[in-house]
Amino acid sequence: MKAYLKKMFIRLKTAPYIGKPVRFAIAVYRIPRSRAQLINVMESLPRLQSASTDQLALLQVAISKHKSEIDRDQENLVRSIPVTLRKLRQETGDLEKKLTEEMNAEREKIGGLFENVEYLLKRVEFVRQEMMFEMRYGAKKIHPDGIALEVSPKVISADKLAAARTNALRINLGCGHVPLDGYLNIDRRELPGVDIVAEAGNLPFGPGEIDEIVSAHLLEHFPQEQLKRELLPYWKSLLKPGGLFRAVVPDAEAMIREYSAGRYPYDHLRQVFYGAQDYDGDFHHNMFIPSHMSVLLVEAGFVDEKIVEAGRRNDICFEFEIAATKPAAS
Image (cartoon, rainbow, N blue to C red; front, top):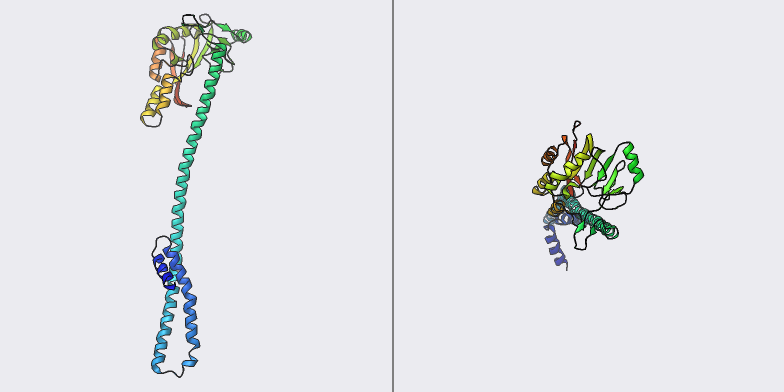
């Protein structure tokens, strides 16, 4: 058994990671044993005084050997302690670094999972609200032949409209679920916060009556020719001379750039380009880049067009904001 343990310790001395701690333990173990052997030899000296010269010489050799072993073990112990500690410190640092990297990677995965779940929950709630309002209010009446008819203008907040006409008539066109304070909020559906139900191309206002028209993510819902030939000139006609037109639309230039760089997922790109298609009216028929939008406004007769901000992140969409005015002499 003793021989087996000895062989096992000899193998452990050369093993990675634990070899140095084993050699350290052996050195510590051997010091008291060597000292005990030396003491036994010293105690036996009186009994050996009558020994022969040869025996005394052998005894001196034995003593010298044990002393050398003790000195060597002490020296090895002194040398191995710092080396072992440095090795353990390095191995501990490497292990800590590896664990930190793995924890950060898992944290990123979990964070991404939570983000996806949160987005899906928001989409489910949004779809639920849209379905309930479509089923309850029915923004479009359906002709017996199956043709969808446009809604007729309907003023819900008459007092708010009257007050706006005495001060500044500012409208938020296509507001959806995001009405703005200080504006008459208009949508083709009778949603909470909507002041006027109307189509974007059939508003209950006369020429030159409106001070400001704003819209967010509305223009992409119309085909290019309808926007160019009908809607932009129509909205310009409703503005007073010097009146302001502002629009926020998806920034196709920024999204294509980010997608090409691998920083923007295809599903987001497709959804923004074509719409979520969750309900009637949530289909996109157009896409814009800042320079193209500027040309459309100039062709419609607007002046002083400027890009307020481009490449702005908004949930899964990159967007830009543009502003222009109706000529004062128009």
